[in-house]
Amino acid sequence: MSEIILKVENLKKEFLLSKDRKINAVKGISFEVKRGEIFGFLGPNGAGKSTTISMLTTQKEPTSGEILIDGQSALENPALARRKIGVVAQHNNLDRGLTARENLIFHAKYFGMDEATANKRADEYLEKFGLKDRQHDYVRGFSGGMAQRLKIARAIMHNPDILFLDEPTTGLDPSYRTILWEQMLALNKAGTTIFLTTHYMEEPEQLCDRIAIVDQGELKAIGTADELKALIPTNNIISIKLAALDLAFVQQAKALPEVENATIQNGVLLLYMKHERPDFNQILEWIKTLNTSLQNVSLSTSTLDDAFIHLTGKESIDNGHKK
Image (cartoon, rainbow, N blue to C red; front, side, top):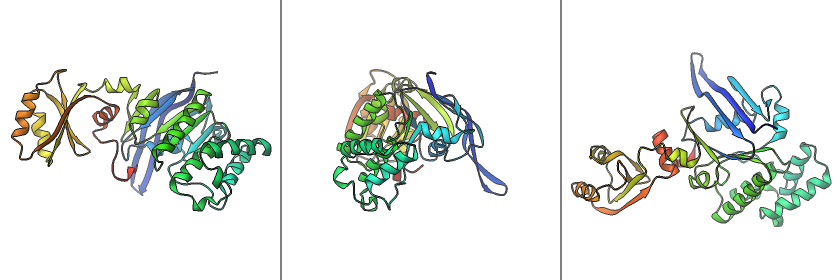
């Protein structure tokens, strides 16, 4: 059995916008996912994440390239590929005319599971995901969080070899995010490979074995969270909270002798320092020259979010979390 469960080679996707105009959404990306790992796939809006996942899960046909799942071409035999994968999409694709239990049973039978096994597994997942009391209710009356939990339960009913999770915890409260990841880690420990996209940077940093970062349809970097953070020129970041922010502050900060780079993230001015022990007095003296007041200043080491910004020039979380 090969160590590689998913191999992507020179994958491209073009969309024709008009007779003489097209857009290159995915520009020849190549990567491998190891069997049994939790693999993160991150990128800002318009990076090509959703388009890539749609191709990997046989929902969209590539313009060119190859996708091998467990050594077999997903393009030549999409039906076989679908038996090996589970998919939790961003949109709600549950059958609203069925109950929660019926959604699970019909999915299991589609993959050839006998009724006794399907019912036993449905009992297990309805209990684990907190849906037992609502199992006979039509899903059209479910809240967003309940629907998301049911989508995840349905995706793992047939014990897929690789599970694609496209922002699975969006809309879940913290307690059910914890329940979800307990289940996902247990599933992964049992041998299922997890392919994850998310806008919560703490999830891939804590959970993923390796992470790929894409932007504008291109693969920018791939590695462990620590390897990606090591790509930042400095490991020390000064966070400055001001009463008012001006984009001009970024350019001024970049001109300071000890500052490698500067950006604004979530209303905070971030200074990426050249040295391990930056001169705070220099920074404080500069802040005094600004036409605003200082609310807070702190020094921290880099995070995966910082690596994301460094590689893409964009924040990981934006309005609406759209791709």
